[in-house]
Length: 58
Image 1 (spheres, rainbow, N blue to C red):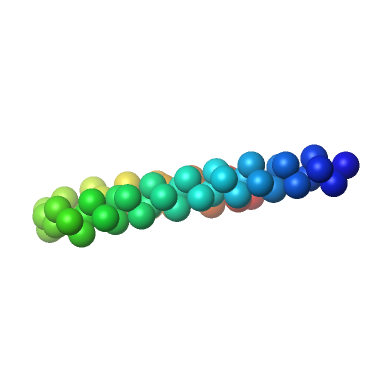
Image 2 (cartoon, rainbow, N blue to C red):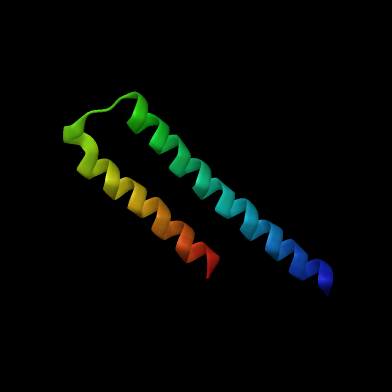
């Protein structure tokens, strides 16, 4: 039984790491190609990634 729980834990962990990588990549893109007029859209993208991560962790 413990293995099943551990497997679930690690599956979730990997999924959350993926969201972290997506957020880091988006931030890198924003910083390296800064355009003030694109910030509102990029903020929406970042919020969507954050929200997806929050939903996955529940």
